[in-house]
Length: 579
Image 1 (tube, rainbow, N blue to C red):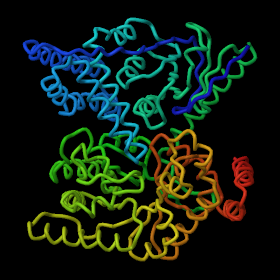
Image 2 (cartoon, rainbow, N blue to C red; image 1 turned 180 degrees about the vertical axis):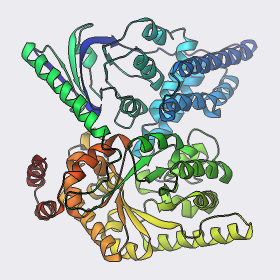
Image 3 (cartoon, one colour; image 1 turned 90 degrees about the horizontal axis):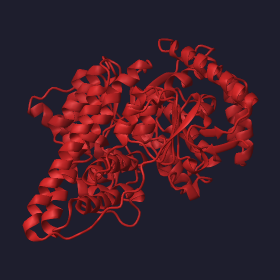
Image 4 (cartoon, helix red, strand yellow; image 1 turned 90 degrees about the vertical axis):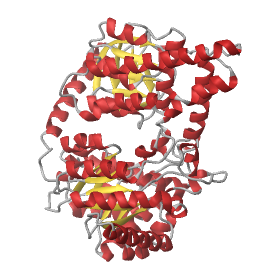
């Protein structure tokens, strides 16, 4: 009997092959107190394990073929940096010395502390970085417990054409599997923004994550099918079902080949309206991915990564180097740098001197934190302004909710310009300042915001979350987190209209912009600047180049008038059926 197991499709593609079950298993962390004369020896054991973990990662990195994109090898470097950071390299030693406990337990205590910090973060993307910390810690724990044979098993076995079904994967394990021509991966844990998901997309490996209990229903060597677009793992198919998916696989390959040809095609609708397609990035290394798909610039450069996994914020010079690297690499194309978007929950990492109250998502975060602590904000403004001398830079302020905040930020920017002028530090004088519309109050007052800013950027992830009072990562509230909710669509329309009336551009940089199912609707609502993850850009461009705006405007107006979300979904399906 056929079995269909559903998860989240994070990397498109169809794969058929035998299943390879690869379970990590649960580590039992022992806890014991050492006699004082053995404490120093335990510290040495921890240091040795830490160095062995670094050596393993360096070995994986050295096996990556030359010419591999920098954004792919950067995932291994991220774990190496974590193992060199004080939070993992020094704090456990302090715990061993203070508590007199064994190394495994000290690392376990530090993991619990870090997990708590990540869980409190209100930024969904940053929250998923907890996986990387856990993977880095797990590697050291396995060495301490002599249970680090999984990578050796992956490397020793022939994985070619197999579909890996596992509880979890780390980026370095996925790199190893890629080198052994794995056909697809299915994990029981993880999300679409995890590094493994991002890496799978970069490598073109079909992948499904969050397929709970998949391991229990699949047998070793059993023929299975993975549909990375629909997020499904199928087993027990008959000959007709297998033939159907083989045909789908060929179609997918042809479609991907066609998409690659669009890289240098202008994003212009059939009736001649040019649309701007920017890319979202997190690291300077992500530039390669943006350039590979022909992005017109960077519509959202998240700067939070610079602040993570360290005991103190980066200074002005370090930030200047990172921002300049991106601006120079884009060679004259615009780069939108978003100022710090972290919350008070980052106190443990040296950012934010005050803790928020019960709900950090509604507390002292993003521009609120920066205005409260200008000593944190000024070095970033100086670094961004200095980077602007190397190419066109747009400065983007997150989580604005009042015009007073715009006024305060502009005053700080003016003061920073004056400081740079006095110090004879070069900068561009015409940097554009924009604001993110991600709070309902900002969308309702978009007309007031548009008069005071050079551009607007709609952050749909938070806008939906705040409008509907539903945490998008809370599975129990998944039915409430709906981009097609009438309130969400009307707020987006209000913002777009405010930008048009003020004569300033409006970009959308949230997940809605990168969802091909919503491209026609957004075009119909009046969106002309999309900023999307690089893997989604060419698919969005394909839809744009095949669209004519006037019919989309009529359909969008009809959807805007709906008060029933199911009716909106039906109308959207009709709109997309015209493809």
